[in-house]
Image 1 (cartoon, rainbow, N blue to C red):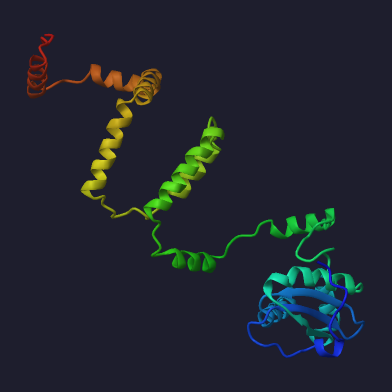
Image 2: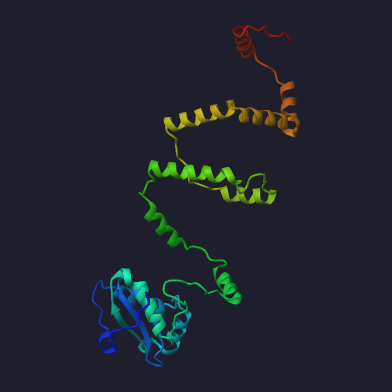
Length: 275
């Protein structure tokens, strides 16, 4: 509900801010009395954030930022218009929006950006400013340290797994049906050389057993068997397959090996062929 009556001005404008107080504030220019209207659940903290962003040239309001760059910090005064409960902040801010016509605010109403659109030149500037941006190594190390020692619970893993499965039911994998070019393969090969992440790492007996069971399950499945047949056909028609056949033709089998083959065939109920 929009208010029509307001407290007396001399009682409102306070520059001293009590702790943990919510209310409506303004940032006023001494130069032309233009104001920025805002609301906050913690007024003291909001004041600190506003002036810190202005000093670092990162304020979300370009009009206020340009004014600060031109006239400096001394021209702007942070003043409390009214203290109020958190539930009433938006309605009261709307009322002050209507009361003050000459303001820095971009949005037509409190708390929303409805009707505000970036121009094409601004969009292009934003796009160019983000191109080529990369996270510095120091920042990456900080992120890595903060994430260390925070294992993901089984419940969260199950939820993530389920969401991924549901996603790929309706979406194709990004690289599905595509192949790397020879140039890309060379780049991947060069990048992988000298990778020491797994050097000296020995999997446990439990991990080995899991890998073994997974491989047996896959290669005994319909998909695995089909893939094995395709691989065999591809190998037989390739140059490597021809070399392998030539090697086998000229290979001399020892008596010990022949005996082993004979015994295995007899155990299966088959007769060994004599050459």
